[in-house]
Image 1: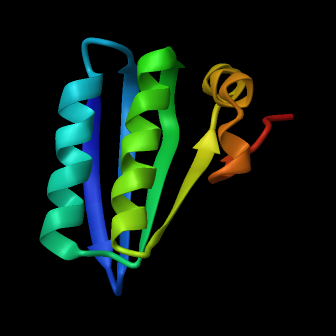
Image 2: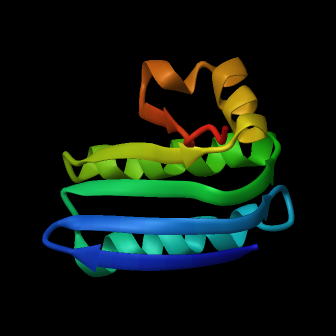
Length: 107
């Protein structure tokens, strides 16, 4: 999995490409924590547009980001979520804690 971080005006966006599973969860958390610690953003967007697969390890990644941003009194959202990761997030009930925006459906 590849991750890329972008920061501008209090907004940290982290883009995920590939599979978010038990092999890639720890490196993903490190990227998120490093970005938060470096920039101290007001808002964090986890952009899942390029995510092709996510298992329960991805839930832990999102929750760790949520907890860290709560410590900073910031917010988190998960954007551009493809269908399979959306099912995992829905089953975990994360939509009750975090704003989750599904990806654009293709015609």
